[in-house]
Amino acid sequence: MVSADHEGLEATALADDEFIIPTYKDIGAQVPEEIAGQRCTYLCGNSLGPLAKRSRFLVQQELCVWATRAVAGHFDHPHGREWMNIADTVTPLLADLVGAKDKEVACMGTLTANLHLMMSAFYKPTPNRYKILCEGKAFPSDQYAFTSQAVFHGYDPKDAIVELFPREGEFTLRNSDILDVIAKQGSSIALVIFSGVQYYTGQWFPMKEIAKAAQEQGCICGWDLAHAIGNVPLSLHDWNVDFAVWCSYKYLNSGPGGIGGLFVHEKWESNKAPQFAGWWGHDAATRFQMPPDFSPIPGAQGFQQSNPSVLATVSLLGSLQVFRQVGMMRPLRERSVLLTAHLEVLLRQTGFYVPPDEAAKHSANGPPRFTIITPEERESRGAQLSLLFLPTMSDVMERILSYLESAGVIGDERRPDVIRLAPTPLYNTTRDCENAAEVLKRAFEAIDRLI
Image (cartoon, rainbow, N blue to C red; front, side):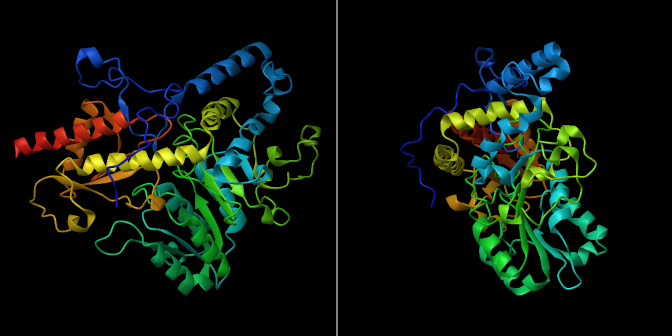
């Protein structure tokens, strides 16, 4: 059970001074003038992380290098970050975050492009083994990728894609149900691919157990880590995950449209040559000799195609340096567990909370209320709480969201009836949680007065 006792939870964030949070004035909040210049309550890092001061400095530095060195910056850089090897500045830090060896990680591309690359390499359907097992309501881009890959290989997505949904009256998948489907249908499943943390509910799936169960049935196991990297501790190498992909603009704070990444386990190094080769995946020792035949870099970096954006990479580097400063995932996870639980306790105490098992009974004509559909168990969630507003399919969520935004509390809506709040340990504080809960309470009180 969630406890109100949060001994050890500091009021300040782990990296209070390292990020630029918009002020109330910046976002147009309707607050008293005397606090308009203060930072807003930003609980939206699961959608877009804020700007790290180091990222701004490094991007400005690279713009200066571009202006003064031009093309020479590829090989002669005043700060030792030759553009030729710019990805090497972030690879070790990304490897640390996902629990991998450096050679198993590549900083490259974007999330869905990397997903297609990985599926082209690992999804090899046969007449008897062709299905793709995933969670229902996966992020739409993933769903589009799964469908288009199935069609490309000549299969009907309605048959080839097996989506798992929560049981009736429940909001998240039971781990046992996932494992049961793998055990029963494993011989027909080519690929098991889930989100590490589900974007809508915030559920953290049991990645190690799913990977083990899938591989025991002869299935490939891959992961979309968009909402997991920088949020929860990962051990992809030790968990024997086959591949993974991610973006970096959420918990990694790299900026809108930031550069992505991928993981390929070293066990595939000798027999998974890239199907769609590009020159940046060619052996760096001979890349600029322009040989006619492709010689891939061993491991994940052989899947690189084009040279990475320097500006996007150093923006990511600035944020990753903050991760390194605070000690990477262990202290982040410790604070995340306490901060998320603290927010949950406060939300439950607003007087408008309904337990999840009672939400289905809430009448369509009942008073506006909310429940939390993110798992309560700490091992099944990261820094996110998804609030489902009742009655569902009404305008309650929109009205609450509008009130929150006007008071300077920034969350993330998922229409028609969910708001996601992400108390991120790098920069969010206990005061952020307290303010969010207080404003939410006032929003419900304002609605009640109109009924």
